[in-house]
Structure formats: C-alpha cells, structure tokens
Image (tube, rainbow, N blue to C red; front, side, top):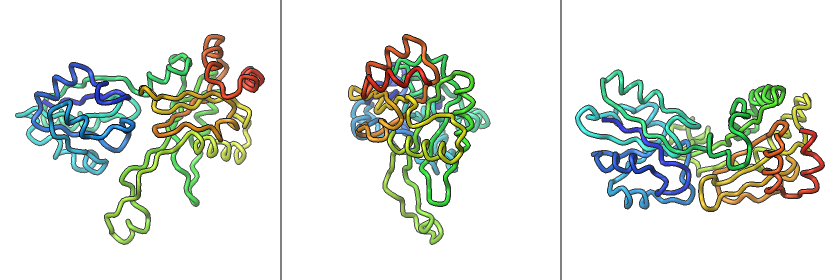
Length: 280
C-alpha cells in the first residue's frame, strides 16, 4: 500500500491520528522536501514521533525517480509525506497515476493546507479567485503572467492568494552549464519581496489593477503558534517585518463588512487602513 499523507502546517504533532497509525505500519517513509517546509522543525523530531527513519524525497526523486518510492509498494506499506495537504498548493497526482499503472493500492490521508488555513485572515474562502504563484525575478526574466489572473480576480470581486517562491536544491546556471552538482543555499520569498515585484509589474503594465495604496494582507508561518498576520497598504507591507518563512500574501477585492473588521484587527496603521480599504 502507498500512503500519501498530509502533515499539516505547524509541527510534527499536526499529523492526524489516521496518518500516524498508517506511518507506523510502513517499511519505508519518504518526505517530500521541495515544495514546502514545517517552519523550524528538524526531521529528527518527525523520526522520533513516528519511530521511523525518514528519507528525503527531493524534486528529482519525485519527478524523475518515482519508481524508487514505489518499489515493492505492492508488497509492503510505503508512506509519502507532504507538508500541508497532498492535494493542496502542490498536487502529487503523477505519483498516484504511476501507482495505478503498476496496480499498487494507495490511500490519501488529508490535512490542513495554506489553501484553507488562509481563512485565518478573516477572508471568506468562497470569495477567493484563482491562486497565483510569485517566483523570484531574475535580471533577464521577470514574468508577469500572474498579473492577468490578479486582474481577472479583481474584476470579478474575488480575493487573490499569492503563493511565494521557494528555492531548495537549486543550481546556478554556471554550475548546470559546467555539469557540477552544486546546490545554492535555500531561499524563501518574503512578503516584502513579493510586494516589491508586484508593484514593479503594475508600474510596467499600468493597467491600474492595484497601487501602493491598495490594502493587502501578509501572513507568515500560518498554522504555527508563531503565525503572523499583518494588513495594510502595499507600501506599508514593503517594510513590515514578517520574520522567518514561510510567507504568503493576499490581495483582497472589496471586503464584506465582517472581512473588513477582521482584517482591521491586524492593521499596521488603522488610520491608513480605514482610509484606503473602501477604495479596493
């Protein structure tokens, strides 16, 4: 049996009882290690709770060497662990398709993900539109296709959740060109960087989708005891301190009264919040 198990967002104790029971029956346990992290949690804490040795599954393992994960899963139990929910921000449908092709039985055990926990900001989940991803800009690559999705959402009166880039085990162009298997240090995009890039593209496109005075909501480490929520103008969020990763950003459309009052609790400056919130 292949178990695909969501770990939630907080720490090693966020796993469900069903997920924990499944892991304890497994001969091998793989942890997907390239789309998200449990903030500040060392893998040894997971191993101590599960009583199992954990093997990290990096992008190349999951995408190019999936058979190593599925090996003998038709005869023994194997766990594939995913921070958040298996079908949350990043899906792992390809692994399931491969398992089905090999007639390997599988079970998915769900958990919380940023896609539903973002309700902690007070924004109603059914008022969100298309989720967009913000990647790190490079000197010669500054993609803006996400801008059209944000515009579409705002035209429809829907909030936009912006998921921020994670770079883990990435190689520089120089090392790739030279064939050197050397990885860059991990990088996690901050709310500040995301806002800076968004404002740059607005200035370039000039379609008045948002402005430095547009109210936005930044979050960090959602689901942990140390989560942070801050609302304010995009200009204010440029300089706000959100601390350690992971960060996400919301660009709300016009808010319902309850949404507005809830978001106001986290305002960096309530005077400016009240001034600009009605201009969404």
